[in-house]
Length: 250
Image 1 (cartoon, rainbow, N blue to C red):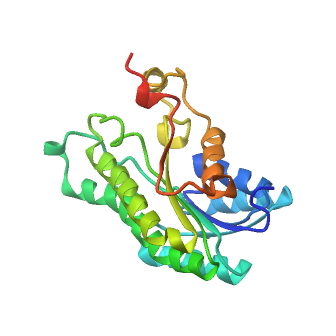
Image 2 (tube, rainbow, N blue to C red):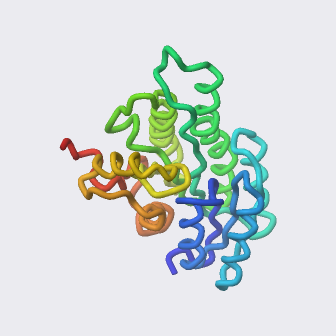
């Protein structure tokens, strides 16, 4: 029970990696606050966790809205008495295409959801962790923009690379307060965001040394490592859980 009695907030929890992490964290004893846009899916997940003997609450909203980050923290503190960790996992790829053809609205949208949401999260979560004398924050970043540049994904790459930079600064600023901040960089993962195009999946599998895509539960295990005391001396890191994508050149 690596998270026994701890209160953990998860965004992007309605499906994919976020939902897998929620189920895993609940099995490890965490009290969960679940966030995403789709209330129906969050309600189903909460009910599933409760049927399994876990504890969870949810609040639907959009991470683009800075106030939503504060509302999630407030729910954690009012319902469970505080916040011990957060897995900030919400994100979008956005419309892909070359920068000269990209409209500014696309650029701004991708940065708002993937990067500025991290600012809002940290702004509210760090004071809550200070009130608990420490804790762990994990941001979902990407190998895109870190170890590889994929054509058509400039906005996504910029946002996810920005999260790593912010992670490093937050870790340096708050390490003495026993607050750890890390970024998790998944490889290609079989989530709704990946779509259902078999040809695309075949290409993505080939990018990885393991020649396959990840199951969301595998990425959730890496998130558990970073959010739990297993990684008690890990902060400011960009942890690759990418199936060897970053080292595969053939």
